[in-house]
Image (cartoon, rainbow, N blue to C red; front, top):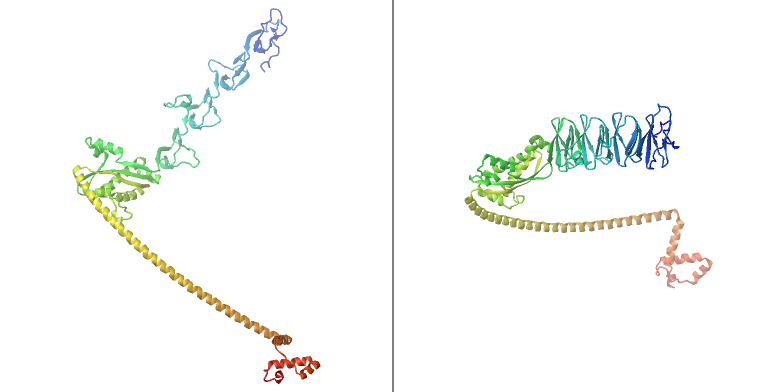
Length: 537
C-alpha cells in the first residue's frame, strides 16, 4: 500500500561498492525516495543499497531508518500512523480535523498533518473528546449533558452509544459549582435532579406525593409524576416552571417561624410568650396564648394555587385557623376555655360536649375545603393564661369542674348502659316469643298440609277404584265369557272347603250327566240347608 505509486525502486539488494547502506534491524524499515516519491524497504537483515542512476535529474536518497512500531513516520505526503489500541489519533487533512482509530494506517495525503507533541493520542474511554469541529460525547449512566448546537439547546441522557457530532457550532455546557471535582463532574449533571433547565428546555421529575407547578403562556399547568417513570420534558420558551408543591400529609406548628420573626420585628420588647404564641382575649378580658398543630393535605392543587398562589397557602391556613380560634375564645370565659381544652368527653357520644377545639376544626375544615385543601387534624398544642396568678386560680377551678363533669359523664354513661341492657333484654325476649309463635304456626301449617294430602290421597284412591269397577263392568258386558269364567272361579273358591253329600239319585245323575250334578250342587250351595232337603240327608 505504501509503495503502490513506486514505479522504480530506489533500493537494490545487489550492493555496489560505495553505495551500500548499513544493515537495517529486523524491527525497522528503511526509508528512501526517488525524486520525492517515498519508499519503504524491509531488508529483514540483508544488506541493501541505493540504486545508481547516471541521470542527474533523478535524485535518489536514503531518509533513514524508522522503527516499525513508531507512532508516526513518513515523508513527502506518504505517512504511516500507528494508533495504539483503545486510542484515537487527532490529525488534520485538507485543513479539516480527522480522527483515526486504533491500528496501523497508511496515509497518502500531502496535506496530512500530525504532531505527537501538539495532538497525540487520546483515550477512547474519555467521556468527552474534542478535536476542532469533531466532538464525541459519552454520557455515563445516571448522568446527562447540556449541549448547544448553534442556538438550539439539547439535553443528552445516558446511552451505551456515544453522541458524535462534526459541527463547528457544537458547544458543551460545563458546570462551575463545587460538585465538579473532576473532568467528568464538570461536564455532566446528575440525572436524578428534580429540575434541570437548559435554554428553553425544562426537565422535571416530580416525586410521588407532589406535583410540578408550570405556567404555559401564563396559564397554570399542573404536572403530575408520569406512569412510565420518565422525566417530563418541556421545550418552550414561554412555558415556565415555578417549583413543586406537596399533595401528601403536611403538619405545621402555628405560629410559624415567619410570624414569630414578624412579631419580633414589629415589637423588639415582646416577651417570649408573645413571640412564640398567638395572643387572644377571652370574654372576661383575660389574655391567653395559643399554639396550634394543623395537619392537612392539598386535594386539588389547581384550585389551591389559583385562589391562593404557591406562597399564600400556608399563611392563609395560619390566618384563618387563628381567626376561627380567636372568635371562639372571645365568645367564652377563661374558665370555659381552659376546661374545653382539657375535656376528654367524646363529642360523638355527647354532642353537647363539643369543645372550642372541635368547633374551630369544624369551621376551618369547611373553609379550607373551598380552596381544595382537606383538614385532617387540628389540636391546641398549648393554651396558656398569661397572668400567672389568675392562671393558678383558674387551674384549680378547672380541675374541680373537670372532676364534676367527669363524674356526671360517668353517671350518664352508666345510665345509658343500663338502658341499653334493658332494651336488649326486652328485644331478646320479644324475639324468643316471636320465634315460638312462628314455630307453632309452622307446626299447625304442617299438620294441615299433611291432612290435606291424606284426604287428597283417599279421594284419588276411591276414584281409581270406581274407575276400575266401571272398566271391569264394561269388559264383562263386552265379553260375557269372561264374566262366566270369573263366576266359575268364585264358585270354585266357595266349594274349596265345603262338604258335599251325594244321594243315590245324584250319583245316577253323575254318571248320566256330570254337568247336571255340578249345577245341582251349585244350586244347593246358594241355598240354606233348611231349604234344600238333599243337604240334610
